[in-house]
Image 1: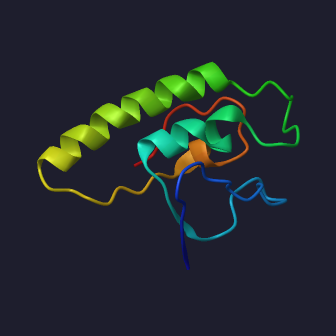
Image 2: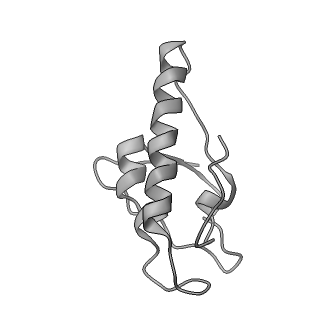
Length: 95
């Protein structure tokens, strides 16, 4: 199953295991920047100290990587890891 979003995506809430429900969510980097993956989920998680500024830095770095990969013909990039989990301060974005 795959989801496409027109402008601002509304991702589903993290499930009880702290991850998004299984699915491929097709988002642009700009959509990721505006999503709850950066802004934080509607409900409090962990200590409640969602590190939005750090997540913005991670997405800015991702944008550089995406640009470089697109220049050599890569059109689909999958991100994973703690960035797409309910971890307040992920170390990085797995791509």
